[in-house]
Amino acid sequence: MAEQNNEFDLVVEPGRSEKNYWNDLWRFRELFMFLAWRDILVRYKQTAIGLSWSLIRPFLTMIIMVAVFNRVAKLPSDGNVPYAIMVYGAMLPWTFFSTAFSEASQSLVTNSNMLTKIYFPRLIIPASTVIVNFVDFLISFLILVGLMIWYHFVPSLTILYLPLFLGLALLCSMGAGLYVAALNVKYRDFRYIVPFVVQFGLYVSPVGYSINTIPEKWRMLYSVNPMVGVIDGFRWSISGGQSTIYMPGFLLSTGVIFVLLIFSIWYFRKMEKSFADVI
Image 1 (tube, rainbow, N blue to C red):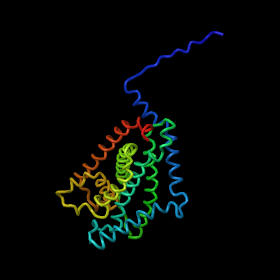
Image 2: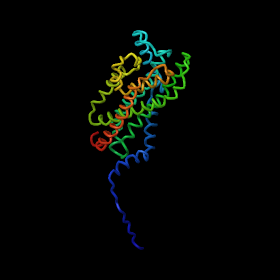
Image 3: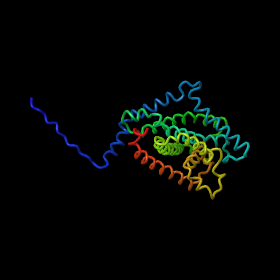
Image 4: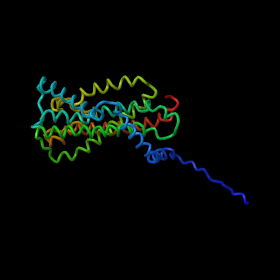
């Protein structure tokens, strides 16, 4: 039998590894779906009321916000929008962001056994965590529908813009989550810092109050918080335009979101090679 010559050429191209990484994200899409589905199944496992927690947490927070800001502080609503709808319309994106950001920041440490045993694009782990919280958002949205029915509030066509602002909330969650997830691998202090940041962020975001209560000279600085533009957008789309969008601030918040996302992906990729050794 003639001996076969299995010679081949190995070609190394500059930047090829970076291209392969993004191709691998598609190749490992089933792993992405598996991780997301696993987290959905175990999220409320062995709890008495299960998925109802997705409804109870934002609903109770909304009641507290209405009691403090409307009943006690006497802050007005926007136009004819019931105050409960105005607050809950802001609670939806904030709850999605805060939960997705918190869980994504811990996701690499939580799945440390996977990082040390097999190869896959590590970006899949925090990304799948963010998607899981999108499911909670859809469940929580049912309360908003119930509030509209209760108050006989009919939204206008501006509600069709809601997916746009939801997309911005998702990008903001991804950007912040990727950056802190990478930091948390090396500096475990962030598991204590993140809850404080989330709690502080609730009060410096226009959740229980309208951005109109902020003096105009401070609104641009206030809008450096990327969630300000997202929350304003949610309120505007739900209220049928009765809640105004401070457009310069919205553009600034949107710009901060994209800068944060691009920087976080760069930093995550830079630190990714050392995850298995450090964790």
